[in-house]
Length: 470
RNA sequence: GGCGGCGUAGCCAAGUGGCUAAGGCAGAGGACUGCAAAUCCUUUAUUCCCCGGUUCGAAUCCGGGCGCCGCCUCCA
View 1 (cartoon, rainbow, N blue to C red):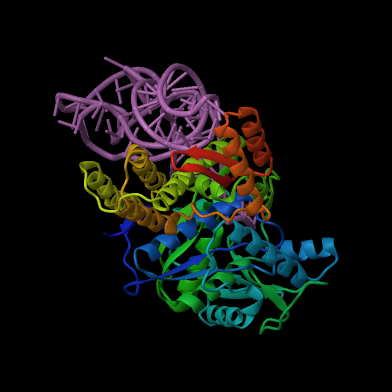
View 2: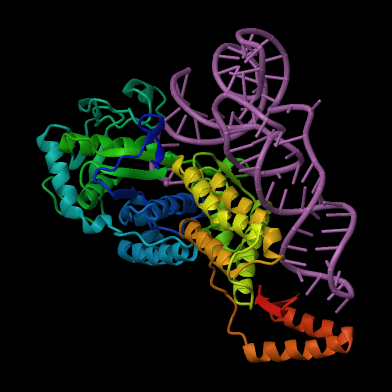
């Protein structure tokens, strides 16, 4: 089945047709590494990770590129604040980025290009724009001349006039148009710089993404993603730069996620109303944060609240319990071959799940619907699981769930509890069994309480007592 | 001023012309259990922000309101 994507460029869903059959090239605007990222930033990282995983689920060979902006004003300021080099700032927060992203179950990209490692490509690209007359030099700065580019504003759905009329920036009179943007910035005292045909300086923000995406993915490439606040000016400018330079289409599909709100307002660093992912990871289970991001469609805003996260944690718990129950049942001595009507109906649920999951995801990554398909499955399967399930059936269902999970990534969660003394736990459980046999409930409950304090929860099943870590 | 999005149960959220308006959380009642945990069963929107219109038929299309949010500046 075909995948349909909502393309910001045309404001409608379009069938996804890759540039090169069986392959997908994706570029995601990554972080400017001057700080920890917050959960608002985490939204695109998580949803685009899921898109990538879904393409892989469908058998595509995905090249996933995510950049690090490691030189810009904010990094320079941060370096001054901390009294270290810009390089050190970047290194520190890149390391932090990986720690947090890994904890959120975000797969590693194929490449993580950094601006400072692509100065040569950037300078070359600017040179091409100069040669073609799309750029001009003022006092060692190089600006892009938006008036020269036909179709500027197409991605944002506005004309140059419309964009200008609402401009809130003070006008730099040296620029031909207020919308012109810096490709190269002349160095100032105490800033990192590189040599260029226009003097010492550093790249502007937009040019790095053009240079690096084209380097790793070619032109045109399939998918470029980012938050909706990047549509203008960042992505608009990327298009202008890249298409002016190459004379070809830059990107086929532009995907943008809606914001994460807190108290009905956009979470952003400048507003100061943010919760770092790092902090959130301490408060909530990592997979709950993931599931939370997938509980709404990526193009709808989601409101962050503690209450919501807690409710998602409950949902997640139920999913994980269910999965655990299947595994547990499979480890028991139960019948293998399906026989009854229930066996065969339940067996079919595996395919139903896969079909419903895929058709939801094919439709512009409808993750809420895809997750609902998982819940419907476990709901319908509940009675079967507690009746007389057969191994073959459970194995097939387990496989289907795991398959879906390669995309959602919400089941497996490394237990964060420290090493537990399994011998001791099992000894206590036997002791409790003994007490229960003698109807010595007080002792039994006391042991159970003791284990709970160790983070171990007991469940008495018809096959005996089992335990798990909370 | 220009451009865009949203308003579905206590909360979250699918559904965009037609079977009984998905799914989750929370709540209530019950089963199982020594009590729990886990699980299971039952239950929770005659109605989709409001008012008109189109239609045999609208949460879904059209017009008009009301409320909320975002972009046009660094921002995921």
